[in-house]
Amino acid sequence: MNIILLGPPGAGKGTQATFLVEKYGMVQLSTGDILRAAVKAGTDVGKMADEIMKAGKLFPDELMAEILGEHMNAIPVAKGLIFDGYPRTAPQVALLDGLLSACNRTLDHVIELVVDEDALVDRVVGRFTCANCGDGYHDVFKQPLVAGICDKCGAHEFKRRPDDNEETVRTRMAEYRAKTEPILPLYDARGLVSRVDGMAPIEHVTEAIGAITG
View: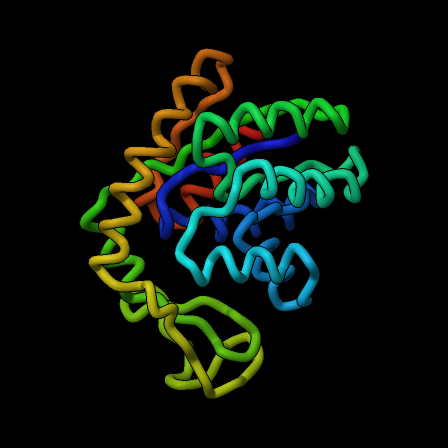
């Protein structure tokens, strides 16, 4: 099973992808994570990506598709893929079609997490993570069981992403509506799109996705 999770930043794609990985043994492919790993490793692609991002330019679609294709080819076809944050534009839809075809895969579901913008701002602005293991928390919805101590690893340091602020979130929402929402009709025409209330409690979202994926 190969699926795309769609939704603006903060909609919960990463959280739900984790559940799918645990339930089905799928592999989550996040283009952001792939690029960050390449930058950290200092590979040729990583150096190129670092320069492009530092210059504030968009990463070329063809280069991103090439990197994604390398990752896909290294994963056994028996393992399903979760595309988290990709594709974002109509040209990327066409590129992904080609990548899937090249490794004998088909796309089974496109699941959109539908959110309320104001509520999403509250959700994103309040989130923070353990600086050591990356476990996620929130000022309102999920505080550590013991204040100042990570539930998972016991570390005492936490961090917040500098771009988790209202202005940035609303800018991202506007960008999502302008660039990514238009790809939904392309997949709707193939009968692949399902929509889930992304503002529901996490476990309810997980159940709804489970009902879709079977």
